[in-house]
Structure formats: C-alpha cells, structure tokens
Image (cartoon, rainbow, N blue to C red; front, side, top):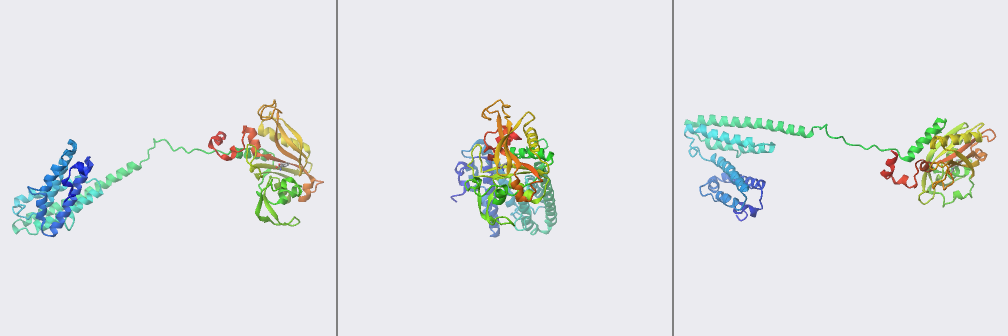
Length: 465
Ligand code: PHE
C-alpha cells in the first residue's frame, strides 16, 4: 500500500504535533474496525489478527519504527502512548472473536476474571467520554446489534458454551451487559448536566462589565432655534400652524400683491414643478404650474381665508429659492412667518412685539431699530436690525464695523392683501414678519457658513448638544 501512512515518517506525513499524532491513531482505529468487520463477514477474521496482532505484525512494527523516527522526544512519547491505546483497542476487539476454548473460558474459573477485564476496558473507555459524540461512539462499539462487542461475546462465547459453563458465562454476560447499560445511562446524564453547566456559565450575565454606551443624540441647532422662537410667540398668545411646501402661484405671489411681472416670479428665481398643475379655484386664476414656495408668507393668505380676525399665528417651515449654495445661500432654508390681525393693531404693537422678541431671543442688552424697506404685501415695510451681538454695537467684522446687523423683514399688512381674503380693510389692521431661521441661528452662535447646517458633521452638531 503505497499511501499507507504507517510506511512513512511523521515528517513525511506532515505531522508535527500531538493532535496530528492522535489523528493518525484515530484513523488507524477506524481502519482496523472496517477491516475486522469486513473480514468477520467473510469468515476470515484471523487474517486481521495476523496483520494487527501477530508476533510478526508488520503493521505494528512499522508504526513504532516509522513514527518515532526523527520526531522530537515529546512526539515520540506521544506515539508510544497512542500505540499502547491502539494495542488495547485491537486486543479487546480481537479477543472477543476468539472461540470459547481459545479464550480459555471452558474453564469456569477463568470466566469471572475475563469478564472483569472486559468491564475494566469498558470503564476506561467511558471515562474518556467527554461529550455526546464520544458517548455514542462507545455505545455503538459495545452494544451495536451487528458487530458490537456484546454481540460478539454473545455469539462467540455464550451461544456455543457447553452446559458446564453456560450458566457462569450467561451470568457474567448479563452482569456485564447490565453494567454497560447502566453506566452509559449515568454517563449520559453526567454529560448533559456538564453541558448545561457550561451553557449556563457561557450565558451568565456579568454585571460587573461596563455598560453599553448609547450616545444620546441632540436637537439640530436649527430645530433648537425653531423651538426657542415658538416658545417666545406661544407665550404671547400666538398659535403655530404649518402649510404646504408646494404652492400655487396664487398664494405664493398674487394674493400677496406680487404682480405677474414681478422679478421674484422669474424662472431663474423660483423652482416650478413640471407637474401637477394647480387647479383654478373659484374666483381665482386657472391652471398654472405649482412651485416650491419661496417664503412662508402664502400661509398668511391661507390662514386669513380660513378665519376672520383676530389672527395670531406663526408658521415655521422650509422654503426654496434658486440659489447656488455658498456660505450665505442655499436652495432650501427655513423661515418662521408671523401674522397678527385684529381691530386696533397699530405700528406701536408691531414695534413692541418685535422688540420683545429680539430681546427674548438675543438677550436683554440688545437694542433694535427699524429701517425702511419694501415688500409688496406690507406697507410700511421695514428691516429689523439689532445691535451687533458680537461687539455690542462697537463695530466688528461681523457687522462690517456698523454696530448693527440685519435680522429680518417685516411690516404692517398691506390693505391690498385684505382684498384677497375678504377682510374689511377699514376695520382690521395687522403686521407680519418673516424670520430667517438660519440667519438667526447664525447670529446667536456665530456660525459663519450656512452649509454647516446641512452637512450633518457630528463634530459641528455636537457643539449644540
Ligand atoms: N416673505 C418675506 C421674505 O421672504 C419676509 C416677510 C414676511 C416680510 C412677512 C414682511 C412680512 O423675504
């Protein structure tokens, strides 16, 4: 057999450790079992005996000769020990193939010691069983119906036993069988308990381990500004409403007194949707392309259409403009619209509300001023400025040395707008404002780049936690 491993040295087999040696011997045991089973079937098991056990067994001498050659001392030791085990394994299995006479069992006195040796072999095997697979292997070796050791003993010794020893052999056999069955049972129970124990240890909760850190997120700085502004106006009796981001030209422009030819309506300034088109509502112009609202002011009109005064609302939300992104521009940003309409609302109420809001939001030391401006839907219109929060009004880079910074646009509602919503312009008056959320946040925290809000870099966001 050219690829018979016993003809090669460990080095030639590529085996260099104890586990490798153990595997070689396991393979030999399998080989022996197969050969014995086949030979027994063919009625010539003595050929196996000659090969494996005979005084001149070439196989056995080869094992020692080849596998201890050139190996380290520890490896040679291991080979010798494994070889002892192999000899025991072979002897045990060949021993029960012998006839009653050959085994000397026709002498009743030998029966006891012979069976005691068998029981001993079994006990050693079962002690070595550490898991269910080991146990099943041992169980099969001893109790398998076809070729198990008990079957061999029964057919080779018990059945052919002459009347003189039959009783003794029978009793010894039954005792051995009972012992084996019982030992297999209790070893199985032990292994199960041990397996459960290891599972328990493995799954045991170690309460001394540090906990899993679940980082808490924080609110986005823009969200914090929204909430702060909402808090201020809710305390003044305003309510918060929201409106659509896709708008009709009517609400975004017309009803806000922004006529057809106004530059804000230019394709270059506004995003128009390819579809769907706005439905022409009653008394309003017909189909027109929808657009992304350019400001939150359309909600002034929608809110006033729905109810008669008094109205006090703020409208937080997203708005869109066709701008290329840079440090001060984005195609999307956030506004909070404000609208108050009632009888007797004067410019004083407007100014007072604006001042109160600015002081609440930026701090009590901040002063405001109103600068004339223009919006088609307010008259008069103003820009609200505050003393620069960074230099306290002395002049710095942020305020371009002026001491003032522009906060937001606002004004008294233009009576023309009341015409669109069926309000009595002679009875009612009011004011409106449009706060840029990015800008106010920028001023509060000295953020110099609008794009930082939308990049969502945690190193930026974490500063507002
Ligand atoms: N809608 C205006 C803008 O986006 C701001 C504004 C709102 C001005 C309300 C006056 C009144 O620029």
